[in-house]
Image (cartoon, rainbow, N blue to C red; front, side, top):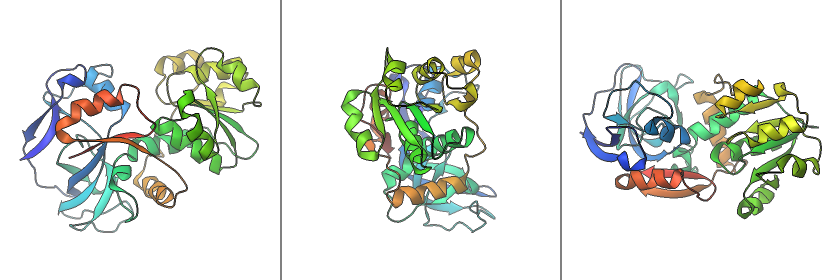
Length: 304
């Protein structure tokens, strides 16, 4: 048996509890991973709350990001690059219900964890990192561009802003004033979000692309600033995507190969993804409460 975070009804973080689920042997192409870190994401909370509908039966497991150690290997279980998976491999990637002691994973969804990459950072990298990669794939930027990143100290926004910088673009990032020093330290030009955003941004230069990684403030500012809708992308502003005609973030770049490359960049210090806080599995409800409240920049991670 494996202990896992579960819930029997939709609602706030308080509906979560830790219970036992039956372990299954890995099937062909699958492995069992002993989870050492599982990053939490807003999507997880939106499904748990019922904001994003799910047909999955109760009790439901929760989570998607993970880093851990391979404990069992199914037939012909190979990484995305064709290399066989071995018991004892340190990995990161994704699996449904990852907030648990163990989880069954498709081996092709995993990347090998670089030895110098902390397990907590690795455990929170998949969704934030690959969504950021997808943002830049959807609307490409480079030297000569000025990019406005909405929510630049959230997980996705922080990685997207740094990836945009590496293309040679200038990056303006919205954030609360207490987080402006972090953005400056990374080379991102901070600007306070909220009413009057477009006017504040206009004093910094002519924006040529908008990445809205939280809400829709940056999208509305982009419209006001005359940025073409085909140069704007959103990750979660579903109503604004339909209303304004901006891009929804594409999905094709969310691959284990891109995750592996991103893990190497983080290990090398080229991309920074802070861990805001870690919680043990038994405090999963508190971890989600922290995620859904005001917290320091970076990932909230459960360490089973």
